[in-house]
Length: 366
Ligand code: G6P
View 1 (cartoon, rainbow, N blue to C red):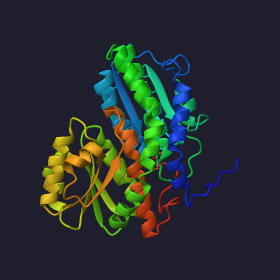
View 2: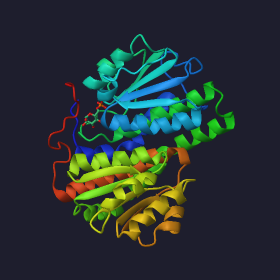
View 3: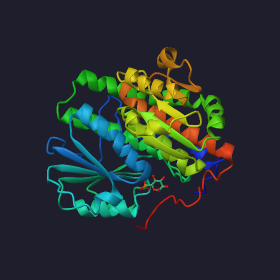
């Protein structure tokens, strides 16, 4: 079947807009009506493993990095996460009580496949999270979990990322339940929050015009910093990666608390700083880092919810309001403004959004 842009200017815009629908697809495949999480092929016995190794490249790696925060906090499972090109050559020792998870949109990334082959025969189970179910990575796994995102054409991954996160979050809940790390009431709360995800993502998409206005300002910058703390730290990396990939603006992500150990030296009134900070238990810490930026005339774009903006948006350069969402799901929701910010910045700069220079959709050579 031929894929067209469906009235959008770019595939990336279309794929961003598709997210409520494709996340709903993924939920329909893995969640029964009465809230049971069903993984294919008999699933994974999370009581037989005591650690997790997650390996991927690019945006898929950042999905793994986000899931590390979830697996450790919610399922009490220690997680090692690495980019495939490093993992495959550093000869890490791996115990047979390890579950190895490989995440890949295409299922064909050469480094990720090589990392999978390194783990083969050493670990308890090899699982993969893929968009292409007939791919090499899916075929060589004991268990392949499709993300049901549909064909993704834009080189910069968007809907595959949020679907990867959705499937990973379901795995986290399954692991937490199998290992007795959460009560059935907590599990039910998480499931009902997940079911509400497509509709909060729709609300986030409605902020398109606000994000476009912020992006117009951002398009003048030469360097941009992204800050996040806790589970928002990997997402800061995703925001920076998207911006670099398609707008060619130099962007770096830092853990908010690490700012004072170096990057704050870069901050002046020419450096916009994007702060991803839902009003969660770490909010005040992040805001104090944000104030250090503003004290040095850094221009802050604050992305938060109504409560967070009411408390902390005084003096910021721009603010983007997200709906409120269960704490754990914020990385999925805040991916939307991160994507839109990169998209509109690239459009303002006139770069080739769907086919950025020097990049390929699927990297099948080393
Ligand atoms: C390339 C793409 C990225 C993608 C990465 C991993 O760099 O441009 O968007 O995240 O490969 O690809 P995979 O298919 O393994 O997810």
